[in-house]
Length: 161
Image (cartoon, rainbow, N blue to C red; front, side, top):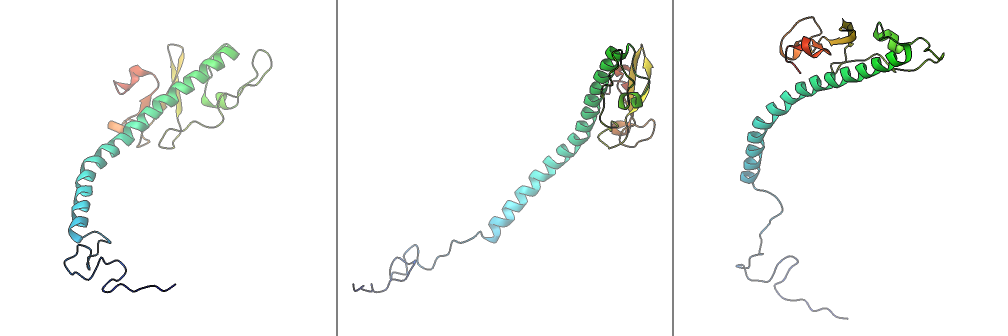
């Protein structure tokens, strides 16, 4: 079979006419102006989004501490059902004595840590119930904002939760 060569045509071109829309026109990428506009828009969005997201991280950590306190309180209630009293310490939840039936139940698998990967402490008994404390982000007693101490007893948090 013999192929006839069409005059004036090359691959990707519509014909020999230079006024043709596809003649010598390359649309393979973005122009510099388009890239600068996109980068500027991303920068403007980042100035609004990043501060909001960063503030939410601390709020999420405080919410996680509150959730952990509730889980510890539930385990203390389970301990009380099995032993007739609340535990004296977190260690007693980790290594519990035998219950009334001679069983040893697991209440905690490991030492409870707050979201800052620091130990949650057994603070004291208030109204016959255990209270737990996380020393917050700074891990020192006292503090303000997200560095403030967090207690499982809601009245000790001064409206924090």
